[in-house]
Amino acid sequence: MKVILTQDVKSQGKKGDVITVSDGYGFNYLLKNKLAVIADAQALNEAKNREASKQHKIEVEKAEAKAVAEKLAASVVKLELPGTEDRLYGSVTAKDIAEALAAQHSVEIDKRKIVMGEQIRTYGTYTLDVKLYTEITGKINLVVSKK
Image (cartoon, rainbow, N blue to C red; front, side, top):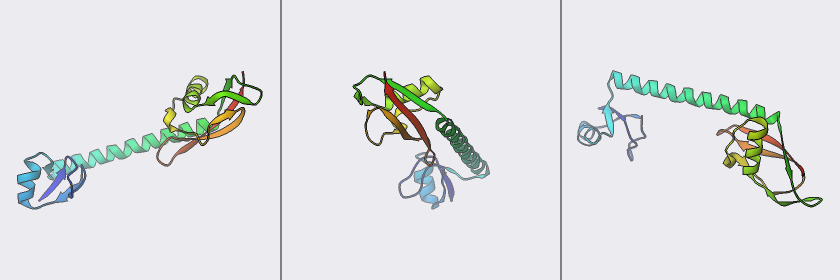
C-alpha cells in the first residue's frame, strides 16, 4: 500500500514522503493515528503542488537575498562613536551595525546574521560578512569615525 506521510515517522520517512508499507501497518497504525493518508491521485497531486510551492518560495527567497547582497555591496555604513584618539569607548556590536544600516540605507537585517570576526574597538574601515541565505553571503562596508 502506498501512503503519503502527514508527519515525520521514525524509520519510515519525513512529512510529505510517499512510501510503500504493508497493509496492516498502513491501516492499523499510520492511517488510524493520522500519520499518513492513502496515496490516491488527488493526494499525490496535492503533494506535488505543495512541493512546487515550496520550491517557488525558496527561489523567491534566494532572489531577495541576492538583491540585498548587491545593495549591501554598494553601500557604506558610517558610525560616529566617542572615544580617545585611536580607541573607542567600548566596542561596536552587531546591533549597532544593524540599526545604522536600517537608518542609513533602509535595509532591515537581523543582527544575528552579521558575522563579527573580532571585536571592533578602534576607528577605521572594516568589511563584515552577512549570512543572508544558506549559500548567499553579503558584505557590509563599515566606517567607524570619531564623534
